[in-house]
Image (tube, rainbow, N blue to C red; front, side, top):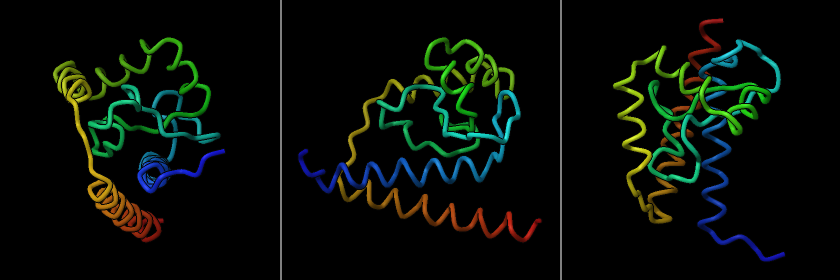
Length: 132
């Protein structure tokens, strides 16, 4: 098996920290409200770097349980409908437009994004601990 490049390693780290952030932020599946087997669900596919790590409130990443995430990979209607009902058709269209944009990151930019999301994650964990 070939060794991962530095770029591949930072993409993996970014995926991991983004998933932790999203699950900490939402705390339950946004669709069925389950708190079991939580994952980072992407409204639009992870293949587009323009929205792959979009942790904004109306962004591409939201917590889904494994079952809802799996169903979404086969039929995205329910997840799309949840997003439109929650945020609006206009926000959905804006997100789709951003998803369709080509975004090329340098490895340094990916590292910077990793640091930003890591900082946001630590702040969120501290906020959640204080509020409990």
